[in-house]
Image (cartoon, rainbow over all chains, first blue to last red; front, side, top):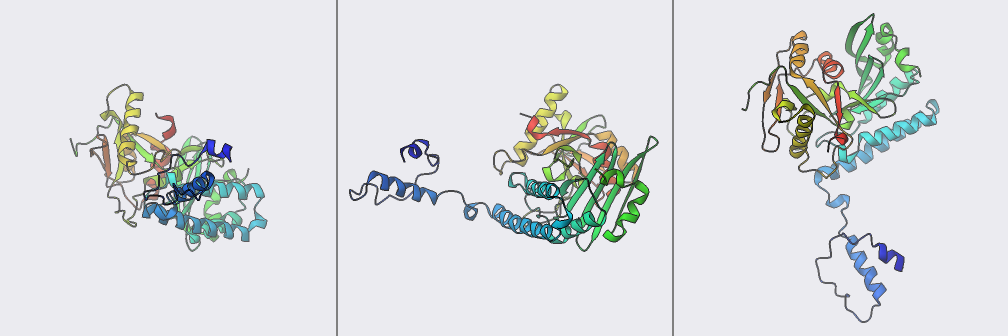
Length: 199
Length: 157
């Protein structure tokens, strides 16, 4: 007990505003009074309920979005290595970090995440992409090999917005489009996607 | 002066939140994504963006490195004023030459304006106006070929 008191992690918290009726009660020991003081101070800790409305909404929405994403991933877990899955979850957490959040942005949507999983499985992607997130909650996956870049933005309902940049004999070729996951393999074929997808 | 054009030889910094940075498979920042140049839509209390915000580097005095530091600090002062200390610690700034921005936009038949738009907290604030919202080619070129000089927020005091 004494060691805990010396550390006192609560000392920087605001003191209770109301007078403590038990503070000087002779019926209570010093230790009990200290416990009561700490219990009262706990009420002043910043909890989701007294954060700004924006952050509360964000925290709640993010919790739901990440839970949905992780459950959706669990349904196809047999197709993803443990390392792939763990890194994916870590990246999703980073993308939704409150300290990095821009007011008004949406967490990843279920529709976008489902499209992402379908694409990852359909294209047999072995190399992990870098991930991003649009204001609308669309997940973005990016592969970069030297000057060659592939960026896929996963839209709801199995749609993908893609941009490609490849260096061919010293010149940069670019292409972009929107299509379905089913067509993605065909539209990317001229750009040798194995260079991005194969570890 | 407000609405003055930024000279072509000068540079601007675009703030890129961590979730709009291009990263490798291990989470290391290596550039920015095309979505870093999308106008953000209206959402909740936020109004739809009318222009892309940047900070004019040469507005600030000193040698180039000092100008970058001053521009980043001015941006932080304006942008993070209502947010917790440490906000944006994993984000970055992408630097680009104004003349190159105009040049690539013209190749995409886009006539944009980059003008000084100072605010009380960020006297170097500037606006990139009339950047097309539906040209994903252009957004990718801006990300891949123009705003390629990345400066980590954490690297600036």
